[in-house]
Image (cartoon, rainbow, N blue to C red; front, side, top):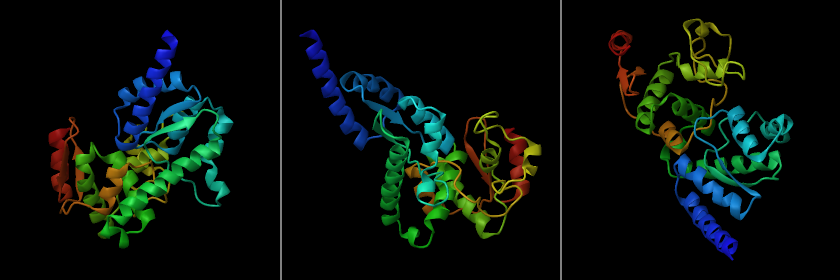
Length: 265
């Protein structure tokens, strides 16, 4: 009888959790605690939280760890684009909390995340007049950079404005996040520290060498970053930095930017 009541309670908690996950973005710590009850009520279902700003390899690791995948299955997860004869789907593994059957095939899990991306971006585009002027692929690239560069969602529209300013002026973006993407690896880590000599790395993702946006997204952006890409803040700034407390400071000129580097670093 005692175990019957435990199971009923767990099922009730799972029902509540399903509702909450649908309507709210929960704190990761809360999700971790609640996932225990999902496992108790239905061991086949796993709670998989895909955070904003992960690159595709990190998403494969997060999902694979939860579902017990081997390296081949992780690669299958990343190669769904081959089935569609398209470029890889970096940036399209939509960040949210998923409830996934532990026996789900990698290609099916990937398809679910890509479908969620299409559904969520369609909502954003339908609610934004700017989407009629901005190509969706361009918005995704910018949103992925914003996600990695921002100190928080309060910075995102300002960073978007600065990125658009630099694009419109034909300037190099010179953003560390794109260089991290070019440099990232299993050995060095996916988001390694950028050093001065790295700015000479021969990669299309090195925005210190090449003008314009990189050839693809660099991470999976969340809704706030996607919205910021379509709705940049109006600003005269062309440069920015974050101080040690992650507060953003922007500048209109390079001289002003250098002065702020001296102040905050």
